[in-house]
Length: 375
Image 1 (cartoon, rainbow, N blue to C red):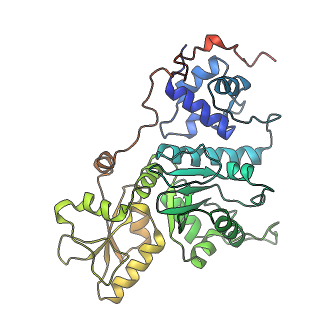
Image 2: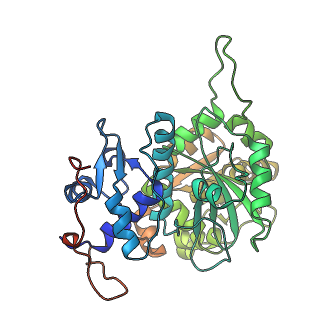
Image 3: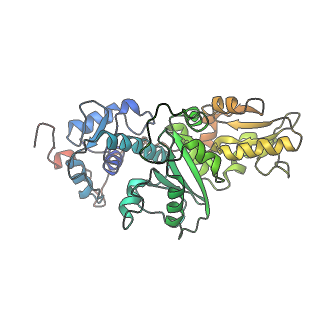
């Protein structure tokens, strides 16, 4: 068996994350059951007994080391379920950014370039002297040419918002990028919306061990942009758009084509004018910046418009229709056509043999198999 580019990339991702959820819980196209079975057969990865975790073996770290990629393995197998669950969540999030075309193998932000960067929190912690992020809950930092985003996984646990925001701004202080925003990431747009806007009331007399801020409170107290991004292929599509320079204007032109008209001067949070009477203000909502949509709805109402129009991806439409019922008409765009025009990436589409810098292929016969029944 000769390892191809996809398999080497998968080994890099697994060794970087240390473990990832099983393929049955992941459908973004980075890997599938057949990919894992092949790597497992040749002793590079193994599946946990409960079938929920995929983990790289030492042989995976060794083969990557031989071709110039160095990753740090656990000193001993991790068994704490809380840590394994967080790692699985972190892997899902990281794979989403990877599928969006971001460079995910960084431990610090750097100079802006043509490619977006995602620094996972475990890498930022490891690269920071004194580990200032030790008790924080963020999952990563996403850097585009124009904005730096702090990424949270929207759940009932909440975050230490003021502390995390302070550390975030301190961490990015030397960056030439000045605009900042928040990304709430979760299973779907509707799930994120439920977490933010329909908080579960506390029951009983149970006390929280830590005084965290709920995502509803974070949303209400911040003036930063807040984007709702689902894990998986839809989230990757959104992140690709957000990494494009002047993406709001460019997406408006792609969606409306010859019918695209600039927004009304008094409504800066809108992106165009809908092409049909009564020519309502329109927002390209594909980035799901919900704070901006809220401002656009309020400003349009103040200007005498009964509602606005939102252009959205099909996955986003149910949440937007429910949340802005009576305040906005939601039009689902042709996501496949739009992604082709933008130039969507295919992370699993490179099955050619991997060639090292020395010009040779990697044959697994070169490395002793590290199988489950061997010590």
